[in-house]
Amino acid sequence: MNRNLKIFIALWFYVGWLSCVYLQVWNWPVFSLIFPVIALATLKFSKVLTKQHLLYLIAVSTIGFAFDLIALKANLISIPNTHNNWFYLTWLLSIWILFSSVLPLMGILFKSSIFITVLAGAVMGPLSYYYGQFFNVLMFSSYVSIIIYSIFWAIFFPLILHIQRTRYEN
Image (tube, rainbow, N blue to C red):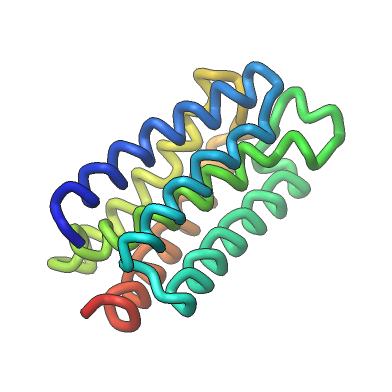
């Protein structure tokens, strides 16, 4: 992956994350799908992704989104203004797909230490959800919810990066 592509993917993730959140705030969540589509298309056309790798990134997004849906049903998190309509969760799915699109870059960045990777997952994963509270798009129901998310991310993040490095990096 060349330097310009790395910079684009990293910046696009942050621009996309913030845009997806604001689109949820403005009740236009379906438009958030534009951001992951552009990210994945960029990776595909730059020949970073094979078909099998793309399917892996979709699987990562699906597992993460499913975890959030389970957490939502278990009242670990709440998402205001969904109007009991799953359509309003497209912003969250978009963020998961955006996250998976930066895995090729994170696989490069987090290859030195499993401890650092576990720690980064345990802290940064729940922190991104916590920031969603500032926009009133996602709320943790309790500190126990934050701990559960921290445990999930401490396991999930190193696992998906290990698979990314061993199966999809040259």
